[in-house]
Image 1 (tube, rainbow, N blue to C red):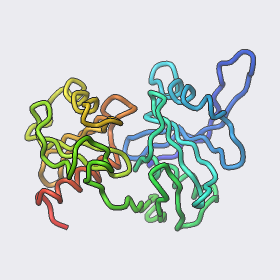
Image 2 (cartoon, one colour):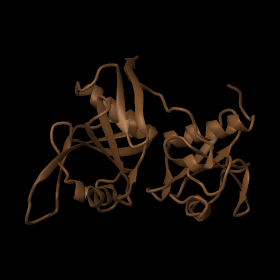
Image 3 (tube, rainbow, N blue to C red):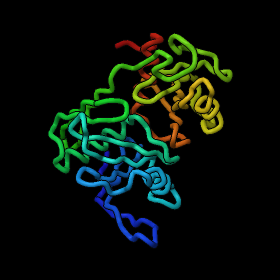
Length: 252
């Protein structure tokens, strides 16, 4: 996980010329722009969605999978808000919270153990440096398989259901995830994943993970809100492992 030097970006508004300091970080290639609002709001609430959409653009913006806002927590030491390239706000992000934790720790906002308030709840985090590497341990909570918690239409758990000619399982690991086990990972994910991501079964949409069992498991994730495959997805990795365990494909 890398932390770039804090930079500044200009807001393209000729009537309100201003600049905003930001940091660029990534967790295993899942990259984010971080805006520090611990002391004051830098991007007005009404502008956050448009700000994220513009800044995340790979050609005409800075380029990122999302914008993290580090804020003061009302129920925890710090808070995290994540706005995605389509302007939507996500409840939780595994790699995002690791990046936020690194920045907050290096800037002295937190110690080695702290809580982060997210839309998915309060998340305990522990950090440390070992052998010149930064480590963050995130308590992702219990995976939720019941349909109301995912959310998904119907009743009971969503395990190995037939959907668009695919065997799909679903779970909430902070955000909704669909998990599909495959034998071959060479396919056009952008052609297949949207069928599940936009399925009417998922009223709030779903991230879509294609998993090839093995040692190690291989995972490709198409992220809701990013609307494309990302290099890594923390909640997707947890979702894939949780479903694999549920199906008896892996042990504890």
